[in-house]
Image: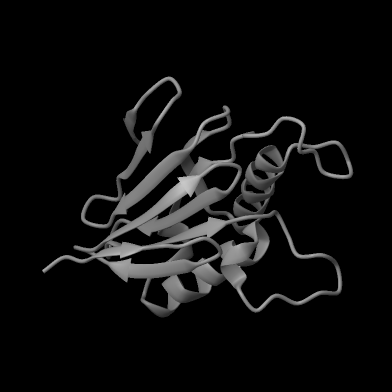
Length: 163
């Protein structure tokens, strides 16, 4: 029997097929999914910010892109996934409030997305699809039977998209 598991803000979860992982309310937040198609296990994180401030630890690895990727990777390897088989997909990273800039003048959604791309590239994990940017919210589902990431948006170019 399959289970539909909700991934809340600053959380990350891993599971095997036939479960589905879902996260709601992605604005500038970024959903990062990793999936191993051979053993059909995967994980999803709903991240808020690119990285913790220097010198500050964080008890919730799902809060930051940098720690979420490492957390997902560690949990998936423990389930039997192999790094070379993992496929990453990104959803979110929108710029909901254009006047909400970081101290460097960057938009937080763009920084979240760029940080994820850099970390995944550094780890040698293939980024196979993404639906990022824009100025609208999204919901993302990772279907572990197929590896599909289904994206629903209220506004934007598509109301339903499969990555």
